[in-house]
Amino acid sequence: MKVGRQTTLRDQAVLNGIGVHSGLPVTLTLHPAEANTGLRFIRSGLGGGRDREVRADISAVTATEFATVLGDVTGPLVSTAEHVLAALRGLGVDNAVVEVDGPEAPIMDGSAAPFVAAIDQVGLESLDAPRRFIRILKPIRVALQNACAEFRPNARGFRIEAQISFDHPVIGQQSWALDIRPDTFRREIARARTFGFMRDVARLWSAGYALGASLENTLVIAENRVLNPEGLRYRDEFVRHKMLDALGDLALAGAPLCGTYRTVHGGHKLNYAALSALMSDTSAWSWAEGEPARPARSHADVASGLAAPAFAPDVS
Image 1 (cartoon, rainbow, N blue to C red):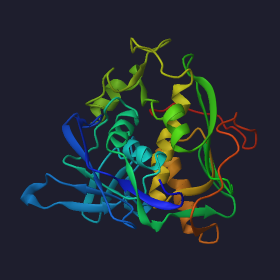
Image 2 (cartoon, rainbow, N blue to C red):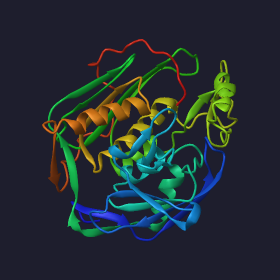
Image 3 (cartoon, helix red, strand yellow):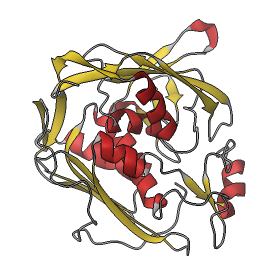
């Protein structure tokens, strides 16, 4: 790969699965795209044979309750977009078209790993255009009830720092930080799965959510244990999945970020609020081309800085 050049896929990649909330079968196809296309979604399989396209952009977000939903003026198009977006951004894919023939991206195994494997199988190629990224120039901080998030400048690339706290013996308080590069993304967070609590199942089903959830695609937590027979993939898989979701949600900036994102007790709604606050303050960021300097280390413990508020559990 040519350093500082935009990238796309060498060929298309196809994945089949079901939607975790809808329970419906869906096919997702990743297509190569020309330079300066960015990341876009096409919703196919609609009535009348008319496809609808939406750019993966903060302005396209229509809901963030249990997943990130993208749409346009006519309504929502694609739900649960965050894992495939995390895979594309984590592997450094600048341009791709994601075609989905149903209302929701497939959940696969609940992580970004199947999308990573599909992208790795076809490979990436450099394009004859400089990579553009968004450099964060000053701190931007938001708070939602008992959660908070902050962007800070970081000249050496993009870093995520996350902290969660659940009043549950299986999770408790967890924190993790990572300088995001393709190698660290693959190794440290790509395989972290979405999770939920057995106690919430009836409420979610009655609200029309989690209709496709199972032990095959969700870490399910009972009163004092994880129900999945294979157990955890990481000791602190829960906070790592929150980082995975954050990476996917922040892909909606429209370009790679150069800065640090710190999230405390966050989720899709907080990620959306923080990115909206950043993008609406044009003095807080600027466009740049090429590549940021590489970070000197791959990960570290989350440093103290933001006060950790009290936390009420929710569903990832």
